[in-house]
Length: 415
Image 1 (cartoon, rainbow, N blue to C red):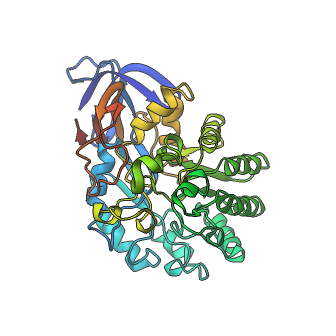
Image 2: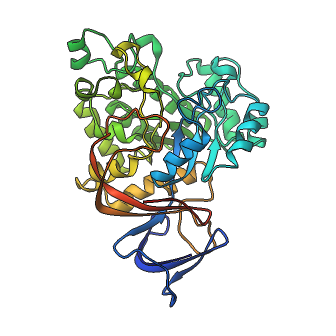
Image 3: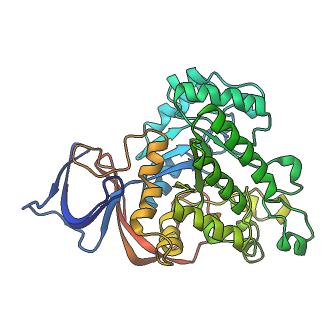
């Protein structure tokens, strides 16, 4: 395959130029001027395939919402060639048998599907899994995502082991003792709805704890789906002290606020919740100054039946793989906060480096995991590839139309 006249943007090397690219046997074979015919992509951007380190494919156990293969279809349609699945499946991915079953099935996917392991057995918050064995058998990190880890001594021991294994732990930072109803920010909108909700301090206290433990242990720690402006400040402070602290943010947290709960109802219910405009501003500041390293979707499929109930009873979360690039361009690039190269860095090489993935760059000899898109051309959010359709963005017009997603040299999505 030869791609002609495309604007190559590689955040790892900062290369930005119009080139031709030859792909052979799953690899990038040549970059430059190639005197042969190929697919003309004049005016389009070729970048490393996007990488999402936080997705829920509901496999095993809830495959009526999503499975490895429909999740991969959704990812490919969004320009993603690598995803990292969470372990809060049914049953949890907390032992070698379930891990091996998942990874063996994931090998048949059209994209690169990785998984982390549960941190504690069945997410009980007390008994650590056999971390060494899980890494040995293919888990690339640990998290009890969806359930906050409340026991500081357990977290301390986990961090010490993770440092020894040189893998990250990702934390869902919400202290449930401070929350009365999850998914809705404690503030003006929750008051209007007559509920208490989830205050931002519930996130802040656990981010502060894990920042301190990360500094103390030297472990690599990922603060998942950061939503509080104060938490952004806490991460920045611990980073300045030398903590190996990383933070990820979802597109919906830098796009929407608590006010959108009135507009979208259960489609705007998230854990952690959408917060205030001030929190959103602080999140964007954190993206600009590098405090927030990674954009990750927290792709969370739910059936329409589950979402079509009253707000306090509906599950939290939305699907996000197919809208991530478009929202990132619209909210961050087009509004002047970040360059396109900076956004791509947070969607490619930064997540690749956290998990030590051989991905996130476009260079001769590297795997041909690529996305080709037009950052200016718009498209309508509809006909999602995900098995679930729970998104507040359906019907919106976004920039960043994707033309091709290429994984291991194969076209896995084309417009």
